[in-house]
Every structure is written in structure tokens, then in C-alpha cells.
Length: 128
Image (cartoon, rainbow, N blue to C red; front, side, top):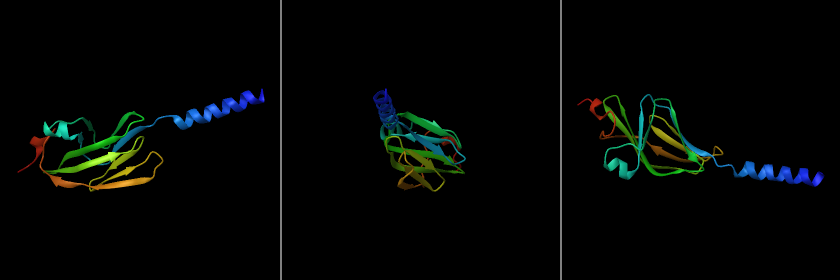
């Protein structure tokens, strides 16, 4: 009986350790964010959008590679050229920087946000 309990406990630990986590992007800006790959950006299309102060969860066990972001802000557009999120990690988007973390909370990267030419949803909102 003790062996059965030990085996059950070991399996529970292994299953918990092997559980895949989804990546996430947390939007801390007052504007909708368009996330795009190089291919979707070529067509001025978003792979997905994140509402103001909202979040996006990816599929379990996945990360995100070579993506960009754009949002329309006060007569200009703000961009992040390329960023990656490790498997199960997350990113926090602020007005001036995107901070990327592993699933355990370890900070792994930072990407500056810069002014750029507008495209994608809301591009007509840019003021001359």
C-alpha cells in the first residue's frame, strides 16, 4: 500500500511538472495593440489584436517567435519591430518598452517602443 502511495505521489509530481503553460501578452497601454508576423504585416493585417489594458493567451505549451506590434496613439503610431516570448512565458507592453519574462517570472528581454508609420486597424485615425 505504501508503494502505491509513493508511485501515485511521484506520478502527480511528474504530471504537474510536465503541464504546459500558454504564453501571454499583457497590454498596459490605453490603445488596442495589433500583433503581426512579417507576412501579415506585409498585407497590413494583424494576426490578432489585444484590447486596451487587456491580455491575449496563446495556445498551451507554445511561445511566440519573430512577431511585431503596432498601435495608434495620439496622432502617431507606436511600434515594436521584433520580439519573442519563450514557451510558456509572457510579455508586458508599456508605452515605452515591452518586457519579456519566462514562465517562472525571470526577466529575459526588453524591447524599446518607437514612433513608426501607421498601418493596420485604425490607421485612418492618424492626424496629419
